[in-house]
Image (cartoon, rainbow, N blue to C red; front, side, top):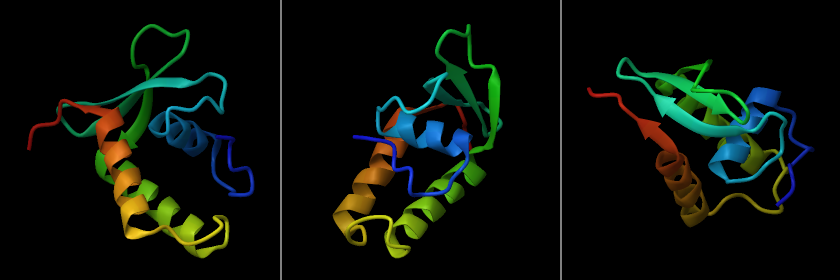
Length: 104
């Protein structure tokens, strides 16, 4: 899968989406996303020791990921809008790839 360059999004969001889809579109590449006990997301990047990059809150990340799915689907950046099953798969991949230590 190639980086969907026709979608205008930040380099950070590109790296996050690539990580969720198990792709390498950025350098450095995110190799792990961790949610801390207080609900913040840290990223570990290739070649670094530990998760040293603060992404933001998990709530904001989830919201922005869902907005990206909405936008890509309706703005014509995909051949067709995401089906319910495709959207569920994208959300499941997101949930599976983010390691959470957040306890509510």
